[in-house]
Image (tube, rainbow, N blue to C red; front, side):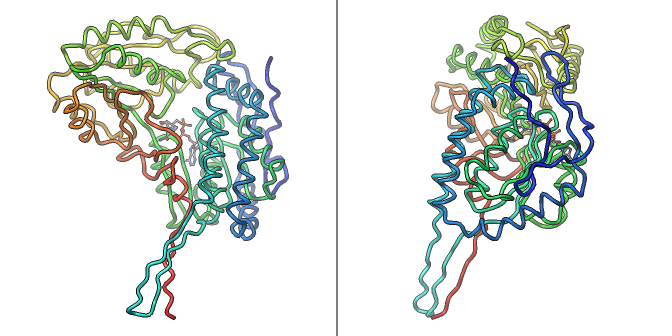
Length: 475
Ligand code: NAD
């Protein structure tokens, strides 16, 4: 059954408001049909949301952490109660299989519970300087009004991490979700009032580039939390209105290194999960694999067989791989594969657009990928994995580190020397060894180099929404 699509309204100071003419089509990627149309909120609409967040801040920042924790736990409960509705909207607009959408909604609820618990553990410290008759007190204070701009690939979780940490810290927030996936964001924000959050503490503005630019460059913000492409992140960094904390969670293009000592079956299973889950549309997706020549052939054969066994279909039928979310992703898959083949690589399975309504690309393995190609250098962000054999450890590390990406890397090796030598040499914020999960809620998660800066998850995710104050008291 199709989910009920909520009206495309902004949430400003506790009221649902129409932000302008609907100008952006939101499309079901499995069918190509228009799901809803949303406005692209203009400067005045964004001003109103930021003003509402500012007005709510004075009271919210002085609430006790215990109170904020209670409301966040209630929000987690609300998410669980509305699980089916949220899952349906994510699959409808983003295209992912129902069980992956279910996994996302479950982890969203966990994020609210996690930061509810962290909220009450924000301790400062006292540094005695008795000989001088002064005491130094280090305390944490909410940064203030936060702007949050998010992409479509995890349309709820990527809002949820920011919302949870900001609200736990005592900040207020204005969220601008992706124009491809607005409805699940509307449904999530509708759960705030019933959970007891005061009006204006969390606000929503719908739209695309107009709304995004107006929010990112708004002088009324005290922090901007952005997740999206490296190109948009760079544009935003140039356009912010003033010096303020920025967190930038940007593009991936993640490598997997499979050494001679690896358990090849485990490495293939990891690549299937982290290369093709969410149709490869994950910032920490495996995009490029470097395999030691002694196990290269075995790896490629097993990976190809594994990819051919994946079921492909509309997310609502719960296959292994759904459509890609938009035509831009589909076209990038085509370009990356075609260029790699022109440069001498070989497609072992897939490699083409699937001809059906909506936006589809077949799960694809490309072997013998030259390191200079787009597939090996850039983020494909689709169900495509490129494989390149290597001979020496130094070569593997140089290939893995040889792009602008620094978000996540995967290492499969049983030899402990290889684990530590290569694990330490990989220039990435997250390195998963012999497992495909580079990001979990209670450990810090963030990128380096072109993949951005700042952390989400873990205590570090909360501290991104807190200023440190050193209070030096003479007595
Ligand atoms: P995108 O950069 O196109 O859009 C992201 C958001 O920015 C959207 O809400 C969009 O409307 C808004 N936006 C667009 N132009 C803007 C502008 N000039 N000013 C302000 N806002 C603007 O990215 P996308 O296609 O939605 O998402 C895919 C990208 O996100 C991939 O590169 C992926 O790796 C990255 N991503 C990173 C992480 C991470 O944690 N590092 C997580 C998920 C996705």
